[in-house]
Length: 210
Image (tube, rainbow, N blue to C red; front, side, top):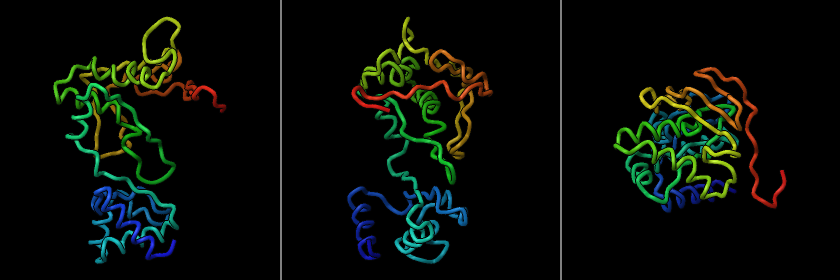
């Protein structure tokens, strides 16, 4: 893709998705440029005295098109509150821990954050738990999961709601208030101590192979 075509593609996505330069947070460019991490394209453009599009293209070049950014446009309390209140919504995250660069906060704090928000909005914890366990298992037809029943997988997280704390200013902050975690019946965390990291099980859609 030549430079002009890349510029047009960027402008099109900004127009269609409503994403602006101050919504784009740099997660990783390269090992040689950690100074860009955690800053928006708009901030970097102003600092370097260039247009945002030129700053973006510079980042593309420096990363050899292998850099990554996070989009903050669609994450705010108002949107999350509306989704939490919707009877059809369930809770999940598709984030993962990155090897390098700025971490995605969702990989570390998404589910504890729901409890923090529930307390803020006066929502019952039972409803929050339901949306991240049984309701999700039902929606995606995950057999023998999502409920505390005989014969089901014992995936259990024990929390202290009064001690739950997150920190959105630190993406990889370790949430507080999580007392114990069991996966498939095996304890993997006791207080702040990780006991095991290989208790999970890959779930495949029926008819597929690992």
